[in-house]
Image: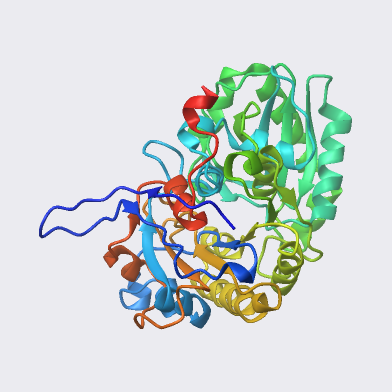
Length: 448
């Protein structure tokens, strides 16, 4: 049974103001210890949150989606909001989910590239820098260079690997190369390289003239030369010639970004006293698991897109819960739909997440345990109008199998209800402590 203590969250108790609960007490009186150890499942629908949209009569995709599973958790349990992105930090999944796993990103985060490198088993020396490297589609429009697609039309992994291998064969050196990944997502490894560039996530530049961003590579001529060689190779490659003939977007450029050196994360089990596992198709999430000592569970058919193996993620998590205390299930599909600006696809992705992950888990988890807590949330908002991430607070809801046996209210899991709640957490780690009912065994000051 988990050690339980107070969990911190910022609260205002001024009379007449919205109540922000900060010392959230965790009562254990109603927990039946005969049911075995507590199990904790975190469900992240990446980028589910959004703005209030005119196309939806002032509602968000979460409000119009069919989500009885998440609504059940919010109605029987608790719902609130959380500021997952610290002030001044880039609103990405790397920053947000690091915090939601209990690690303060403002102290631990070094860049996206080294996290994804860890997922691939790429060991970096202290002087090495890893960049996330997208295959993208760039297009000239007069004198403008337009970011047409950050994913090169969600190019297949088979095509992408062949393109990357061609680049490495003709342009790589003993200092710089690209490690192939999945679809458009790859790692550029620069041994003894610089991490000081100001780079730009390509999904933040969709439809924009990117000359200003491309010219930032001028500060590192060695890297810029490699990029230009790669572009020349990609432009002439038979795969891209074929894609053009099939009216598909060519992967005609590489775009390195999110660089950094390996972050220092303490062991999840040592910090929290819980054995844990992570299920995701995305290297970024797997890398956070590797760096924190969480088990990475590979699920066949997990794609990181709308066609992912939703039920398989739940089934593998249930199997893992027989051995571990905590499982994170991450689904990327809503975020991808948002970046594409496809509202109908985003709503469909949310529906699939609820029906095939949230509801399926609620139906099946009693086969493993009757003593559990489920947290459902998104890591950040990815609003359709801007097609990129937002730093605004995200909605979350928690269901506790021992305490939440009676419906408290009849509400929708959505931003509107979450923002009206009196439960607000000022950081991801604060929400995580509240969810797992404990404070860290290893305090930050001990690590300094």
